[in-house]
Amino acid sequence: MDMGKVLFLNGASSSGKSTLIKELQAKLTDPYLEMGLDKFIWMLPKRYHNQPLWDDILGKADTAGALGHQLVHAMHRAIYALSHSGLNVLVDHVLVEPNWMLDCARLFSDVEAYLIGLRCDLEILEKREKERLDRTLGQAKAQFWKVHAYKSYDFEVNTGRYSAEESVNQILRFLQSNKKPMALKKLLSIKDST
Image (cartoon, rainbow, N blue to C red):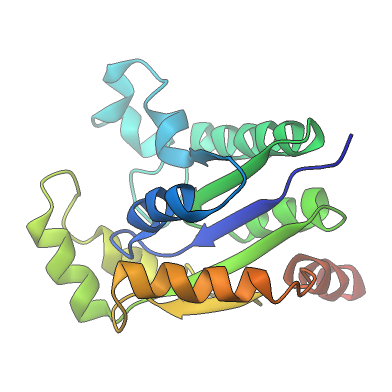
């Protein structure tokens, strides 16, 4: 059985990950499942979505608690299992913890897994955050300084400069170029050499 492709879309809150994933699902020829940390968080009992239990998940927006780490590592293994079952996966991720990136590099360096960075100016992220009713104010700013640290990408797109449609078209053109994913392999080799 052929392994499925994995596209990790990494960016701060309000960078457009969910919107791009929906557009990609509509435009990609092959079916892609959508997965992300929010989906795992919403599986928890509702009491975990509020303080003080929220702090044990991702209450600080840029730092995870023990349960947050457990959820992310489980999510990575679920994505790995799906790809090894021949299913393609689009992943909505906020890689704010260095060990999350290392976990991805270790698990997916031998999988056709692309790491795609979604960049956006902080002012735009904060404006979007204020317009949305489902985000904690300050979340984008807290993540902005960490989400792209230590990362090498297979492809990047500026979702503040380009519309969702153009951003998706850029990603599709990149995928059609048939370049092999290298970012996770590179990150793993850097970590292994230290």
